[in-house]
Length: 342
Image 1 (cartoon, one colour):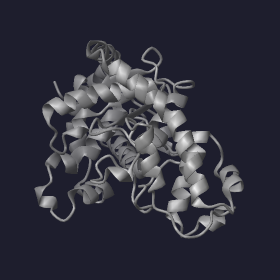
Image 2 (cartoon, helix red, strand yellow):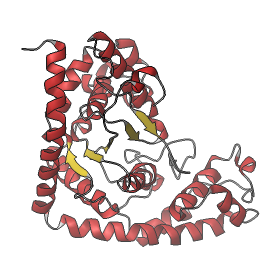
Image 3 (cartoon, rainbow, N blue to C red):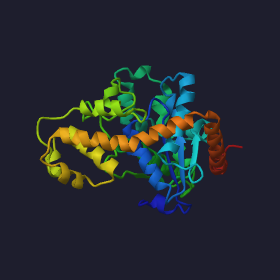
Image 4 (spheres, rainbow, N blue to C red):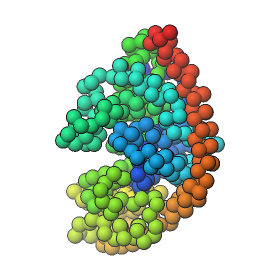
């Protein structure tokens, strides 16, 4: 951490991140977040959350939310997260998230919230119809992170703004309550060649599980035929593939498909460009289909196996929540004291 407020924090380094249980996980979720979650548990103390409270900022069918929470937990584990090494839990089981979010609602400024681009995107032209939760959820995201005094947050590029807000809130709380160094100033970790995977139908839009077109994304539940069909129909341009990064300028679909290949193959983009440069999109799509099936099929199969025992998944979530509460509860006790709550 680089700024003065962070330097004064002398607690342990800790990683926190989370994913919403709303709709099927996509290849974008895997490459942009979960794949890096798995790598970080080898070197850090990690908490990985199913953020079910964030999910209800837009209406969710209750029974579907229950199923999706379990499925995301199963997918976490199928992707390689180990409940024995990392803390896996769902947000609503730890009350510190909601309690600290209210304190942060009173620390954050309206102007900070109004500049959040994701609220503008999700609320659209009728923001007066959006829920208050959708507007205020960046304060809850800050609480997610700081309830555990997390120092590092692996996120996709599109979530960087929310971590920057968490940094602002941490610093303002420390200043307002004369508690320099109480909260760390968390650092976003944005690594890899596919930190923001784009739509297969439009290289200028993020791959999203909420996109109306299922052809815009690869779901982690897709079978081989679905993967092949979607990649075969993925948008391209008429030119051959470039041999260097400069040749990707103004070609978002080429950049997206090549970046996905690089991320799945654990190769640098320059290596992939060298291999496919001068070739047709058809060759890349065939190779990418084969690679995607090899990487995703085991995750799909293991997720389905784990979903066969929902009781076991619930036990993992409860155990994780108990471990999470052991970290967050003392932090909240200190927050109450600093704020002046009796």
